[in-house]
Image (cartoon, rainbow, N blue to C red; front, side, top):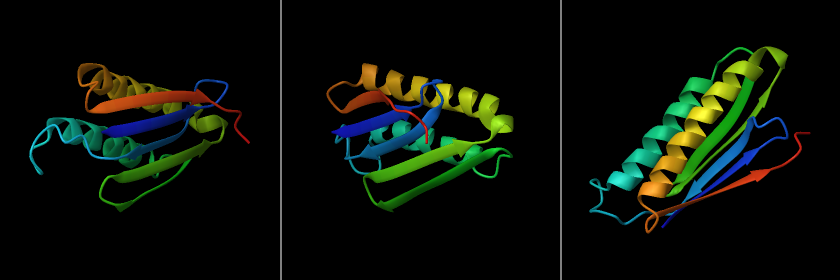
Length: 112
């Protein structure tokens, strides 16, 4: 099963996201759940990377493990809000459609 943990700050902005596990909803290379989650998280990381006012770190140290952390200055908050909302909505959609293969948890933490 894929486990997604998302942390938003008290303003609702994406603070971090981690994805672990494998859906096993299809054969390796043909798993629709893994593909959907992978596309969403990779696109979010690439979209946020290099964006003025947003700092992002992330890695995929091995198959089935991915993480990203964000920080922003005042000029990046609107873009982070939109990109984070898009990512969360997409991941929630996958989790709701395939609950036997993907679960998602959203937590709120204060941003340091």
